[in-house]
Structure formats: structure tokens, C-alpha cells
Image (cartoon, rainbow, N blue to C red; front, side, top):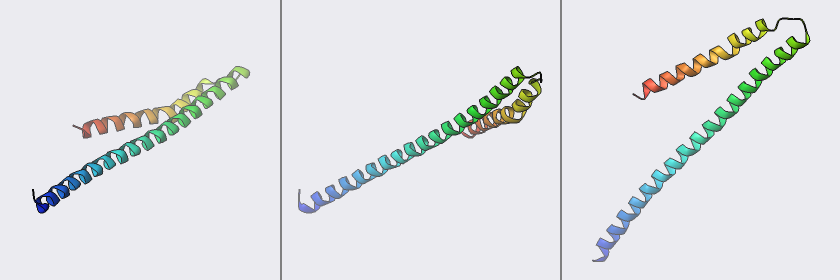
Amino acid sequence: MNEIEQAEREITEARASGERFDQELQRMRERSRISDRSFIVKCVVSLYVLSVGGAILFLTIRGANSSEDVFPGVSELIKIAIIPIVTLVIGYYFGTAREGQ
């Protein structure tokens, strides 16, 4: 094998190695994006569950300590806070499921 053929082979190997490096770098970036999104979703969902749970707990304790009826407050909270989020999640799920087909 002469020097020119060896140099061409080394260039080809280096190019293939660079392409593998680029592919691995892209995979790592995608994993990082997914991880970031997952963290943000967990934080938002946790905050939402805590706030709705806290409101229901407050209304329940307030209703137990007073003669006031708590059901209207809890039902209003469900209508305002829970049902729209559930419908949003279901709509998003079916929208992305249809998109993938």
C-alpha cells in the first residue's frame, strides 16, 4: 500500500469517526432535552397537585369547624381547577397519538 492510499484510508476512517461522534452528540442532546422537559413537567404537576390538594384540605377543615356547607366550594374547585386540566391532557394525548400515525 502506498502513502496516498494509506492517507485516503485514514481520511475515510476519520470522516466515519466524526460522523459517529456527531450522531452520539445528537443523541446526548436529545436525552438532555427529554430530561429537562421531564423535570419541568414533574415540578408543574407537583405544584398543581399540592395547590389543589391544599385547597380541598382547607375547605374540608373549614367545613368541619363551622356550620357552613363545604360541598359548593369543593365542587366549584373541581369545575374550575380539575376538569379543564383533565380535558387539556386528554386532548393533548389524542392529538399527539393521531400525529404519530
